[in-house]
Image (spheres, rainbow, N blue to C red):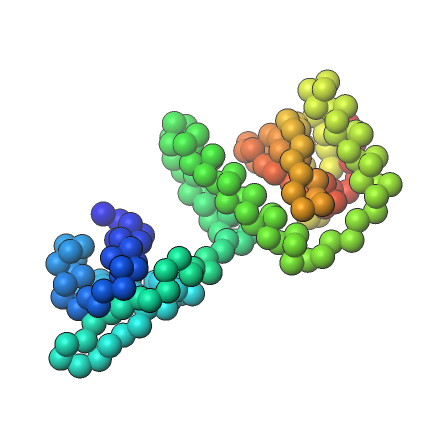
Length: 188
């Protein structure tokens, strides 16, 4: 199994509330005790803290079920995108769906944290232009995060008072979901 898979398997084992020695975990996962310690460190980097019981009868225990504070950010999305482009087309298609879900999580959580101020008139104009582009299957040009984009919109998504567009980014050769309020210089 991969490192990520083993790390998650170890976490699932520990979620039972049972104490496991490093040796027991290593045997169950068929890895060295050193790798178990590495998995614990990886979980801690994600904010999941495993309790360590010291001594002869010590081990690891996890008492907080499903209390993960795991999140993604734009750097995570960029890293996944760079890996996807190195895969063959069939593998890219499988992973693009997952990446789009992660991208949506990042966009929604980032917008909530930033308290974006919305100009409703500007938003209405953008909405009308994009709506027409969707109906006529036209390509749009605009700036998003100061990056010039050529974009063919497919649909709107609504989440917590924000409007997003999903479509095909021609320059990046990828499906993207973008916050409408972050779009500037919109032209059809």
